[in-house]
Structures are given as structure tokens and as C-alpha cells.
Picture 1 (cartoon, rainbow, N blue to C red):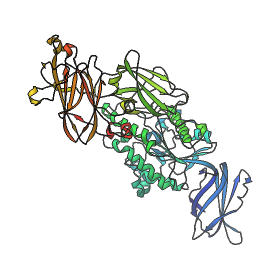
Picture 2 (picture 1 turned 45 degrees about the horizontal axis):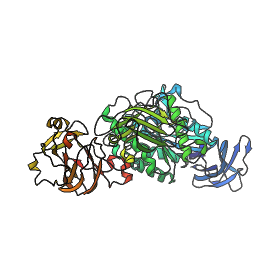
Picture 3 (picture 1 turned 30 degrees about the vertical axis):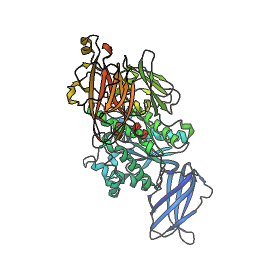
Picture 4 (picture 1 turned 90 degrees about the horizontal axis):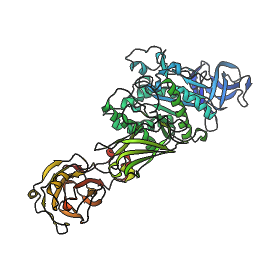
Length: 628
């Protein structure tokens, strides 16, 4: 007799919901007859498993299912082919079998394992690996023994040459994951090694399944079928090779389709999947940081669109080279993955799901500056950092605002900033910005904050997206006073105003120097701005001013405040209007208030963006283009 799939020495069989085996296996035999199985634990035959009838061997082949072996082990399973009189024609014993949970371990190099082997966990007898030579044994890093691989794809991806044996590097999170899972579940664990370093989602495309062992997905499915076509879920670390301008924008959709295909091929529409949010890389440069963060944010958002999925942050972990998590911290990562998997499966002993971004809001401090409050869900205990909390950053259309202090309070990070509240509303906030950030915030269960950003602060602080402050305007000469502007009508011709383009150095478009030179007399000045809409939009003109002011869009009077006075604030007025597709002209008249008024703040907000798109960030919607 020979087993071809589903039942091998030292194997872990996947348990079912009744906490027992339901193992499909197949093979060949020379004789034909009845197939029976006896199951022993030590010397004791399990009740109901003495010469249990499983079916027949027909034309030299058999397929059967061994149900009901309790979770645990080890067990010895004796298969026999018997004739009609009960005589034994052939027999085969399969030894050291466990029943528990089995996991597909996939992705690229950090799952393949490149941490220093001297820091790898010691093997445990109830945590097994299906190595790449199609052999079950206790899990000991590296479980991806590429030098003995059965599947051709792993040789092809190494230039057609079988790689050498790993002697220094090779620790992945897989073994630590299995060991923590055994602690949390109390049952044996099996790990099916499937990863390959440097691989992209295009190379993991499920459409390549037909190539079998000559494709990554085909090789994974071959190993899945080899082990009886039943697993508990997927553990995944991949994304570094997709952090580029071509692949990053479609990474989220690629992962969605990958998981859908995997669940279909595994016959489980809710197959749990836990992935790592890629950590960091040293020396790739500033340009790479944009796409690195795009992939990380896609991984963060994947559980929002794919059910029964979780993402585990790793940005705080140490490296053993420029891109690979250290052997010591691979152990930390494996434990985090196990806790996330068990939280996903409803095991309360595992704690809460991974930390997730919950809300961002603005607050004004006593000294007048603003602060950004970032709130997180699923924090266990309180947030903490080994020293000053690191990892938060601001970005935006205009330079200047900075974070000068970060305070941690339970599940919140309070970012104290060097600018007024109104200026912060045009900014975005990040955690883990770039390819090599310093991030050190965890909760009391040693779980990192996720990388995120850029998340527009106004997405939750003001609830609608804003353009940058307008700094390029066309400005008229100073004209005779129009008093409080009550009787001021729209100019007959903008060309007749003598408008001259001007670039202001700050968000407040200040004419202070010119107004001061004019002396105490009152004057009138016009400031104009063109903008263009790619689609019809519902807009707000966000106007700040320190003197009497009037505003028109496309010649239509929209706003007048005769009592404008200093100081100007960026949100003095919010003027709503509708803008059709195409170009538009915005005109502001400002009275100098006898020299006390100096200028304006101006930017546009869009009111008709659905909140779900606002939360996804600027790439999910279009804004008016400021033409100046």
C-alpha cells in the first residue's frame, strides 16, 4: 500500500467543529478488497476504531475519510486491505499522527524566514511543519527548506539553481505562531510552508494555478491537496515587492481577489486570513516611501472590505538586515499573529483584535495652538512607548505645521502642534510615514499601532475635504474707499481692475506692507482666483478676513460682511454654492478698514463627498483645481 495524499507519518490532521478528524486520504494498493482502519493511542485502541470499515480498494486505488479521531494525539493508524473472508491482503501503518489545526503559511521573504537562526524558537513536539520536501516533522526554523523543495517554481525563482542550505538565516514568524496557537487552543498545530522571498502579487496570481508546482499559487494548492484539502486558515506576509508605482495602487484589489480565490479553492467561504502589515526597509529613498505607505494602508484597510480577515502591524519590530525582521522579533510577530487569528475566531483568551485607527479630531489648547487627537480601537490596557512616543507625522499642501510633543492617554495619542487649529484642518496625519520611520508605540499586550496615512485630519475633524490655502491670487491696485461695501456691485469688467498675479509666501495673503504705506485712509482692493471643476460640485468658500468683505463667484453675489475686523481667522465665513463642471471665477473685495485690515485666508471645501470616500483619503475623490 502507498498513501498519496492526506495521511502521512508525523502529520497534523485538521480538526472539524466537533473537535475531531475528518481526514480525506487517498492512495494505491496492489490488492483489491475492503479497506479498514484501526487507531491506537499508545497501546490502547480507540473505541470505535478497531477495523473500522472505510470503503474498498478498486482497480488498485482507494479514497476514504477517517472521521472522529479526537483532537490531540499522537496516534498510530493501521490501514488494511481485506478479502471477503477477512484475510489481510495488504497493510500499512501511519505513525505519530496528531489532530488539531493546520495553516497555510504564505508570502515572501519575511514569511520564508531571513531572521538569524540563533534567535529561532526551540522545536516543540506538538507543533509540526510540512517542509518543502513534502515531509512532516516538528517545526524547527527554517521550515522553508528551499534546498530540498519539491515544487519547480521555487527553483525557477532562484535562477534555475536549487538554493544552498540555510545555515545562518532562516527564522520566520511561522513556528512562533504555531507554538502560541497551541497555547491558546490546547490542540496540536501544523504549518504548511508555502512562501518564497521577493515575490509579488502578480506572481501569486490564482490564475496561474493551472501550472501546478511551476507557479506559487499552484504549488500552494498542490500542498493543500497533498494534506487532505482541509486547513484552518491562512497566515500571510507579503507586499514589499508591490511597493511601486505600478503595483501599489491595485494592491488592495489584488489581495481581495487572491483571498476570494483561495477561499473558493479551499471550499470555505469564511476561511480566516491574518496578514502582516509590512514593516520597514532601509535605504530605499524618499520616493519609495509613498508607495510603501500605499501598500501598508491598503493592508490596514483590507479587513474593512474582506470579512474574517485581520492585519497585524509590525512597524515597531527590529531588523536583522535592511528589510527582514530580526529572529528575535519574528518570535514576537508570530505571537501577535496567533493572538489576532484567535481573536478573529472568537477565542476570548487571545485578547482583542489588532489595534485599529478609530477616530481623528481637532482640539484647541489653552495657548491657542491646535492639537490632533488620534483615537484607537482594541487597545489592551493603555498605549505606551519606551521613552518619547515616536512615529507620528503631519503632511499637507503648505509647509510649516509640526508636532512638538506626543502624549499617550489610554487609547489616544495627543499630537501637540505648532500652528492654529484652523491650519491643522488642511493637514493629513500619518503613523509610520516613509520606508524607515522610527515607531515605538504599543499597548500593554506588546501590539503595535498600525501604519496609516495620509489621513486627512478634516475627514473627521471637519467632515468634508478642503483644498490647500490659496496662495496665488490676482490682485488689483488699491482703489478709492467703498465704505462697508453695502452698495458695491460686481465690476463691469475684471480686465478693467488691473489685476496682477501675485504669489503670497504664507496661507494668510497679507497686503500689510502696502496698506501700511498708504497711511490711515480707507481703501478698496480686489483679490481674484480662478478654479476648475472636473465634475459638478457642491462647494464651500472658506474665507478669513479682517475688514469689510464681499464675495462673488462667476459674478453672482454670495457673501457680504460689513463688520469684518481683525484678527482674521481661516474660518470666519463658510460660503456655500454650486459649481458646474468647468472653469469658474471667484472674486473678493476687501475694505482696508482705515489701515486695520491686511488680507484674507481662502480655500475651497467640497460638501458632496460621501463620508466613506472622505475616510479613504484624497485619491478617492476629486477636488477643485486652483488656477490662480
